[in-house]
Length: 355
View 1 (cartoon, rainbow, N blue to C red):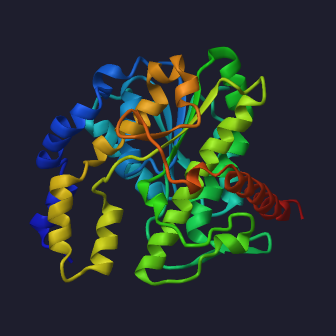
View 2: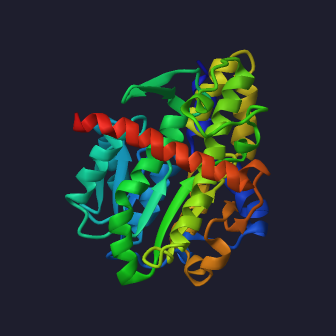
């Protein structure tokens, strides 16, 4: 366990890291949420993993601009604590943020969450931020519909794939009225670190079973690669349908962000020098607030609406720069394989519900 003062340094907003962002980060981007996010009154958003980290701040900034936000969380206890904090910190009208129970690890639970949202959605969905995810965990699996798959791929990719499919009809209805609907997928530069051989066409290809520290990093990287491939392929398919061509799909790298999840990974793998890693993170990493900026830009900026040709299907670096992901993340065949496998796996998992 880290000493209290060191842990507090990571958990705090981060005076040093915030100064770093305002100087070096400010040179690369002129996006400032407090000024650049337009009035969002009347809009509706869903943010998965909204109870902590960058997801929490994404919810907070959207709601402060008047957006009704459904905060996706696995447990009500965590969600209620986050809601208490949101309203305590102020700037949000009562009732504007709602709890949405969702566990992204299994398609059935995702479908249940989508159905719950649709019962209370006011007939629209303007913004979907696919933010939730697990970090470099030990190899474990989830089973549904007779299939067994990597928990990392299920929670980080398949759950969001199913969520988008379930909510696409209401987003299609919304874009017909507003001409502005966004689907944001939070990825990572860790997508560069994948197994040497990548096969995304089958569930077995998703199940990278090795469990050393490098293998755990590669398994996480594989799921983040899937995020970027999915977002780009989704945009291509949206553009091919006249009813959805104005929906914009963007994947984002939030930056190197200090987070509780990252701290746990450090404590587990580097207990003898975790204090040094925490110090480095506190100095050079972004605070969770700044980590939310790229998602917020993608979800709200009028620049995105005015330049869908530039931003649709793009991969963004902090906070508003169009980046170039790895060659694998630009592989159309790999994206198509992932899409087909996701459709088949999701269908098999959900088919059991009908039995």
